[in-house]
Image (tube, rainbow, N blue to C red; front, side, top):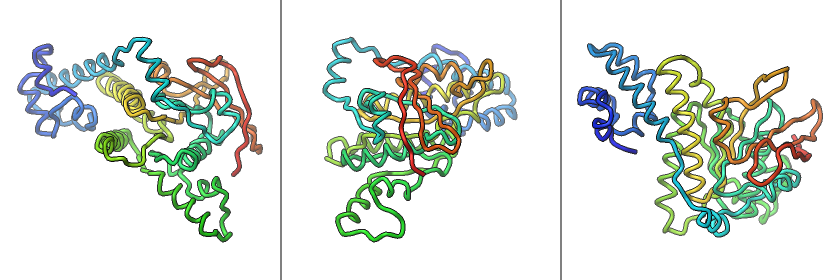
Length: 325
């Protein structure tokens, strides 16, 4: 992203004093600014002689970031050719979901799974990770925000049960699958940005080296990372919104530029007339290319997936699938 100094001509608040203040906290670019803990930065600004002007500068940059988060233009022919040549479809391992999505998760797209607790969201993520690693011999980058990643469940998907012996072939397959899934614990949006930027760096450095390709990126769950920064008023509210949109934009950028399928989970909140709706509000609603809502009856292992949003499938279409604990 652009250096802060480049904004000075279009925004007088981003003057040398503001730049010096940011530099003292290791902030030299808009990207540095965005991944910094802005609550702490605002607190430091409060202690300065020109506190009001510094806080106005922080608010101004948040406005610039919010306005700049736009996808580049591509014409229809370019999009069609890119989809045919580079954007493959990856099976999730659940036949019902694959049929519902026209084959599975599409590379270059962000697919969101929405549902209440215990509706099967994490199970879908784990199954998809196992399936992509097993059947496509690809790497999976898994960001886990709630300690829900389970190697035991992954093992179960490749037909191994705890307490049973593995022959040499089965042991080799299990090791290959588990070593292909790179799991990282992230407990706030700033550590998620750090992990995604490291992924971007690795992807660029590996493009010409013939490494095993990352084909699936999972964030379970995006809402647990974003929800704590939303709300508030003034610059805090603007920061939360800007960080949320920037996270969505970065995930879509990684998906598109590196031909990766991105899968994120989101929880539900109360809506009108007692119905539930996806969390994160209207601003996030436009971010995912595909949205699926999951539901599950208590005590049952049969789940239902329903399309909330899809570029080529009708909203409201649903399918059933079975999960095993």
